[in-house]
Length: 147
Image (cartoon, rainbow, N blue to C red; front, side, top):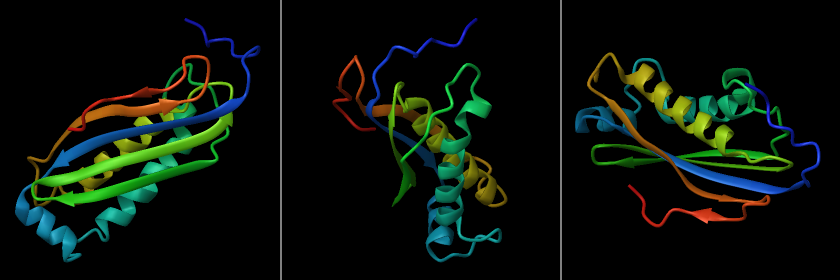
């Protein structure tokens, strides 16, 4: 194993967008909307947890470069049977920011599960995937379809 040598790479703007979904019972979605979850505001806790997770990615993922992030945003969309999490991460760096976006999305979903598990143990996290990335030698990648 080894960390990839990025010493000779050029600094470019890197952007990654990752999404995931946590499926919840409609009653759980209603409780979140009405702010009736005993642990507090689920959406704000998940948003903050995701942003903090993006910043901590190199401490969680082996061989992941510590890189300066210029932006990390977590958007949460309530749907009939779940919450769609979309994370955007940006930085001027020598390596991509995909892992930071993946980590943020996954931790936001885990936070929602943790806050809602007392009323919805059957919640399911799924579909965590890269939607778009840009910057660097490999250029732009964009997934053609959403979940």
